[in-house]
Amino acid sequence: MPIRYIDDEPVAPQQGGRVRYIDEEPQQPRVSQWQGFKEGLQTVSDNLEPIASVLPFTAGGTMQRRQLNDLNHQAIDAAHEQGIEGGEVGKFAGKMAGSLPLAFLPGVGPLASGAMQGYAWSEGDTLGDKAIDTGLGAVGGKIGGAIIDKAADVLTPVISPAVRRLADQGVKMTPGQMRGPAAIAREDKMASRPFVGDAIREGRENFLQSVNVAAVDEALAPLGVKLPVGMPAGHEAVAFAQDVVSAAYEKVVPQLAVRADPRLAVSLRDVYTSTVSKLPKAQQAQFQSILNGVNFGQGGQLSGRQLQTAVSDLGRLARTYSTSATAAERELGRAVSGVKSAMDDLMVRQNPAAAPVLKATNDAWKRLTVVENAASRADDGVASTAQIRQAARAADQSRRKRATAAGRAGPMQQFAKDVREVGAATIGNTGTADRLMALNPVSNALGLGALAGYRVGEAWGNALRQQSPQLLTGARNALTGLRAPFALGGASLATQGRK
Figure 1 (cartoon, rainbow, N blue to C red):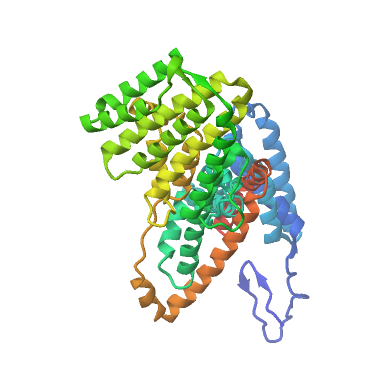
Figure 2: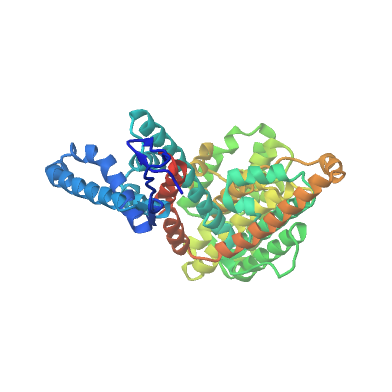
């Protein structure tokens, strides 16, 4: 039997005397989660009361709040005297409910929100303890906000307008290209890993092939024509486009007739001033010879057949000179292209009935010159993104490339800009790293894991491209809207258990 204590001193049994024993063991406290919930709420209320008492919009209710807090403390103390203690789960829920409004204060980021949560949750009695809890809450809030931001980037990445435009044109992109420069850089670094490196290189090659196919389709778009399904990019595709544009000219131009007018003279003079006057004497003489070949004859007229011959010759010469290895001849090609454009405008101006077809054909020819220029820079006719961009810039006939600088150089300029943005230059891979890593089982395992992630990203990116921008924006906003609750959760986990 236990010994009874009186004033903290034991009363030992005496021989022959009366011994008093305790009748029963002390009762164990009863744990109540509801009591814990109320205690958690009260902890938050006690911590926030000093702040609420000085804020203009809450200071007026200070007396009432303090009276209510006193009553709550009395009720909590009474429960403790009755052997009722608050459960930790209930305390956690009470603190969470009491501090939840802090997570949704406007203009407050995860770091500040977490700091406020840590302070509100603190059970410390000193300023030092509360400062520690505030700091832990700030760290936890930052981590919680970062987790939801990362999830939003993975599940609902921001798809740039360039990616959407290229996707609509049938361009195939890797997961990194769909997500932007940072993802492209990460993809470049993975290109030397076993297994996944082959997939990345294959994806980049598919991108370049589909870009060249899309470029030809973009050139033929005014005529409503696309490359035949399955036709590979390169010389064959460009030749097909040339035949389509030539056939369009042959169909409409022989039916027309034109007469030289003052506007044509002004256009030719502008070509001479902006380009020809800066050429060496030899190229100036060549230009004059080409211009003399456009013989308007008596009365300054050209019949349909004469017009067809002139337009065809100008187009051929413009293509030939524009793809020359000599800078002066490339400039001569620009000048000849300017003459052809002036002739095209003349045909449209003086043949209003045929204007829609002529305009579409002229537009297709101008676009095709960019594709031809880019293809001529590549051995197999499959141009790089940089070569497409250079060709689009070279097609700008304006002085000092002012149209390109202002974004008004023509339809192919936007296409060239998009492919250059999405298909930025990548890190080369000689294969040495692949051979070394192939001998390492750890590298092989990591490569297989990265390959699985790459394929998942590829499938997810293709699925996202098919969704409307409005739907993706709404989903992303809904996900990032969870940043505050996740910051609250991070702060609560960081401070949980500190007294």
